[in-house]
Length: 346
Image (tube, rainbow, N blue to C red):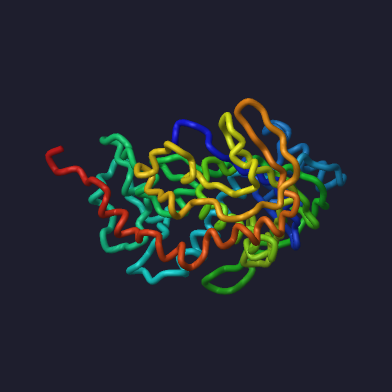
């Protein structure tokens, strides 16, 4: 979105496990006949050819493993959480957030093949057709969560780094598989996860509107309260985590220091930006608050401030995404009405 960099928020996040946490490594396959080894293991940076050896050493000898959480895993969990809570704000006939799982069976299917009676059909399914170019106004036609996290028609505003391991204890959890038909135990198995886990990652929000900052502030409120679990076994009480920002940097790009007056500006306050193409309004994104910032640093094109009081910053940005802002968002049906559907002979 936009050809130039306008603004950027970089958040350093600490993730703290409140229960057994398991983010599965899809490369691992338990060897048959060795019941000492787990069926599932936490993802690590171990090369595939050494994975079995390292897992055996961790389980039998207590040797450490280079654990991490892929940024895509964190991104997917937090996106899914936002989709669910935002869909709870509206009735289906006034749906504003799509369900990415409701889409055509095949990528090349025409737009008309998406179920018209499903109010939550995915933005990607409506906007992408292999036979046609992507729509020029994909951002404006996407739902709020797709505008923030992206879809197959347009890129994401948010980028997640991998979460690096900063502490915790590798632990083997015993499990049993239960037959849904008889209720009896089928087979016991083990999982290698982490207790008292600590991870740190960075996320970057670039070219943001103010409502996106407000939504991020409300998300971090729920993350701090442990309401968004992560990884496998959520129905068993696994994956309970708390997450909080430990450092926030706010930057604006250009020759002039746009943050020199301590005001928060969204992309809609950038002079000369073609906002109509993206469905933005200047009136809805004008600066209106003083920021708790430390003295900053500037280069030729980048002007950065470090947020001095993170809780105060989140509280001040929460009103950027409130009930009135939500009411002003278009419904999915209104956005879909703007999509140009190709004719049968096109």
